Length: 308
Image (cartoon, rainbow, N blue to C red; front, side, top):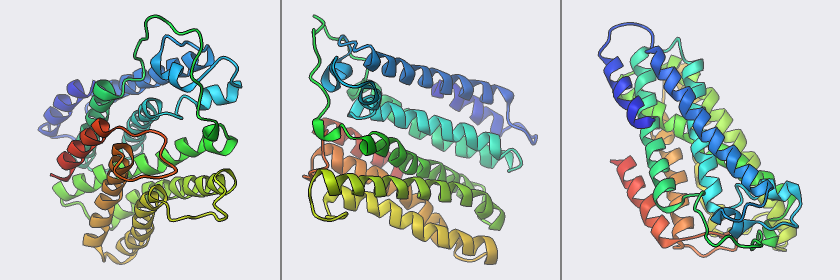
């Protein structure tokens, strides 16, 4: 649907009025609905122990408690990526609903940049991380989820962490849109500040939950071990923390506009860099439960395109 939405949004840029084409909202609603339906169907496959699905076979078994069957949906690479795609679309949907008073071109450019990211994630999902691969003959039993991952805290840790990581995408897209429209002022900072705080809060909670889990599960004797994956999650968090301060200064005093833009773009870029380093297997970590060099290369190419 992104390939339909992008031309319509681009054409709407040339129409001089104050409101976005209603068809854009309809298409985004359909996009959100279809991805949500896909994610729900994956959850149902886990609940029903449908081992004809390769993702279910690799990460579940019939005797696993219902709670861990559901959390197993995002406790693997393919399912977590589908969840990220869902969050990407949900955030741009909410952004358009809450920014109707913003300049039309700013809204559309934010939508266009966000849709480019969505296309990248969708292609990644479709080409190398399809969560709906079919197995034949159908296995009688699944391999089960890694016992270390069967933990109440870790069941909610990934979704919260993704809301922080992926939340920074809307900051990234709106910053690029603001640059194209020369809309970097205190009004823009005031509206973007809420998204920055939301991303920071979710990322903070996600990191805290991960640290608590690592403390009693891995037996490190501490909440922070300076493990590569921990350090990678800390980088965008530090960036968002600095961004909160700079965006408040921009809102109140109309200063630090350049720093605000740099930090806004860097937050999501660092999140993508971290994803590449973890998934590619370049960094060895006790946190790493799924890596594939081929997937890492795809992420690297996508990251290169974003930087360009």
